[in-house]
Amino acid sequence: MLNKIKIKLLTFSVIIVFIASVITCQAIYLNKKEALSKYNLSAVVDENCLNGKLLLDYVNNTGSDVNELYFCLYPNAFKEEENVYNVAVKDRIDEAYPNGFDSGFLIVKKVLVNNREAVFSLEENEQILKVSTHSITANDGATVYIEFYTELPDSPMRFGFGESTYNFGNWYPVLCPTVNGEIIKNTYVASGDPFCSEVADYSVKITAPNDMRLAGSGQIIKKENADPLKATWHIEGENIRDFAFVLSKNFKLKSKQIDGTIVYSYYIDNDRLGQLALDCAASALKVFNEKFGKYPYPTLSIVAADFYIGGMEYPNIVLIDKNLYMSVKEEALEEVVVHEVAHQWWYGIVGNDEIKEPWLDEGLTQFSVGVYYSEVYGRERYKMFMQENEAYCKVIFKVLENLNLKFNKSIERSSSSFEHWLLYDAITYDVTALMLDTLCKTIGEEAFYSSLQLYFEENKYKIATKKDFISSFGKGTGKNISSIIEPWLKGNIHWG
Ligand SMILES: [Zn+2]
Image (cartoon, rainbow, N blue to C red; front, top):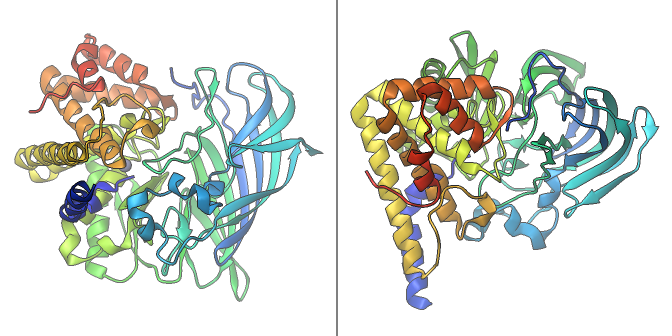
């Protein structure tokens, strides 16, 4: 996700607001050779609601016996107004709910395991579904069938809708993964992304009004017109970590092919900026293919959406705030598009626990924007970008100090432990990018990129941790990089 751009644009007003307030007061081993779980999903969409069915062909890759399965029901984070600060930060609540609070949720209607009624219960404010199963031994499997009903809130969020788009992000029950023997049962946090899931294969059928255009994860295999008013999209996705889609009556579409991948730009009205988003995404894809490793999927969609937080990544699809498609915001549009494309590598292909180690995807992604600038515009632009990161952090630290907020600057902590969302933003994105810049300068570009490529290859389709990052760089350089990055991870910032 990237909310920083908008914040940067708003920095002046944010500072004024703050001044005013001060005055007044070990990876999962999901080797492709092993069988993956498969999500067979169908959804019948009516406006902001859908009736869904999930038939999960579950494969136990945990390495031990399993007696119960857990699923994240992220939509229920949006259910109650009293929990609203778990989905949006206080300072931006009016942007999250421009028409006032509206509830979004997921209701589980039926659960079968191997075609038999199963016992299930809801935990953690209904955000976690627990399904009792028979004992499933390692490498064995089971089928889990879940019937559910999902309703999007009237809200320009990744799970929500606005004037132009219906954003179906995290709309179905997602299996909680097991990492190093621990089941990761993440629930929503307002700052950053709360997601962590295994890669799987997907076969999805979505039925929606015929006058809608659909952009989504995976590849559209065919579109059938069931009746004059409705269409059914058949979509397949291999080796993807999640499945999101966006529907709109207003989408225009442009596309181009790069390195064997078709890049799509779905946009609402401004043709020139729809093209710009496409061109930036295609350039970013090419740069990252060369610098990190090949994007392994046939399509990538850049989608203008009612989304107030800048940009949001899902496998094969990224959501971009439609308000960035304006001439005066061209640079911001480019940065957000490039950031979200970089997430395809750091979050999508190489996964991580976004709550526990948010720096691992956001920091690498922020650094990747610098890599793009360097390759497309030259070294000076890269330096400028790093200087901007540094300046931004210093402003945020000053603002928080003026608020008499006690905070520490460590990178290595969970997204829910930050003392303020602006601090989460500055540390997880910018300070981590500066740390990676220092690492690159210290070990040399050649060693840095060969190690990063190794990190990508070794953790492709897995859920990586800091240990894996250090391990790949150790193999790539023959050295332990801990002495370089640990001071940063512990909060000892070395400004450039
Ligand atoms: Zn991000």
